[in-house]
Image (cartoon, rainbow, N blue to C red; front, side):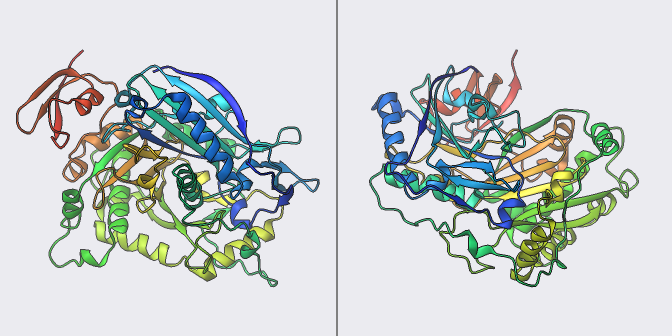
Length: 505
């Protein structure tokens, strides 16, 4: 797949805004300083509109919405005291236009697509803001905080990639912006206006950081990095798996009848289930998945928790109001103990995250001053799992005036030192989910071969450009076709369920 950038411009607010420094909150300072990447695919839009018309509408509506979301047109920059803050200066949003020499299905954007997140479509590399995955300003170069890339495909479809700097906004606020942008483009009033008062998250006069757990100022040393390299010899990859209603029902039947599985939420059960399977996949392929094969090596599950309701923060607050809950165990326990037991550990960790915990974390960051402070998942050396849950985010309400997206997902590059779970809403609607799993390639192979995994998540991911022979449940065959071509086929109902039956060379 070739992505050719054809235009690179800066989009500024339609009405100039007051230039000023917006001090970051301590919850902004404790997140990983990287870009959060999301991509939206819209099928066949260019059959009724030109790409130039699409781009013009997107740029004009972006100018208008930036009047309300003006921090996104600013820059992360170093102040004289060495602290990074947000300079609201209307410097502009980087807006890229690109042509993709492929069809939408081949990019994983059709139907259940997205089997492999496509970082090349994010625009981060074309933006030339640094090698990543950490993006920090220096004394010479302030950091743009919003990068957008709009792409056209051979099949007259369009993709919109949106990347915001995590230091400026969490997932909730980022999607709040995207949805607001689409509302302006559609001629609608904003359903929720942003609030840019970060003083709502101030440290207390008497600092108390006693509740903080799972955060540190520690930096990985050479021997730890060497150890991590030994654990993670294969490259990290990401795949998307669909989780349907039947799979969720099966998940609640994995325990015996004496277990009250329904007292646990779907999120808790899925988290426990995937943590268990990922630990099983992590074990050396030469060993069995028995208790003897597991070790006493520690393993942690980090889940990111929203604090808006816990802190009674207005829904429109724009910034970061998240922290990570940390459940700790060891590989032997996770491998041998029940999913319910693991879910109870996750529940204990997440329920400890209350108003007092958030306030304690805000105080803790204050005590560290200029020292880099962060969640310990950033220091993982290959035995931990990080879970992000966006299943209730309105990704499929993002309508710029030509319909809702065919598919939408996070689009981050795979991370090397930590296994990851990103749970997304599904294009199939309520009751369905999409799971993007980040694993090293050898672990992914073992995970997909694990009966515990296949018994629940039997559907194979829609691999973007692998050519296969396909067969529908009704026995109709599609020879030597990509997943994208199958799902684009007009000769069969779109509701037809296809499964790959062989690989053709």
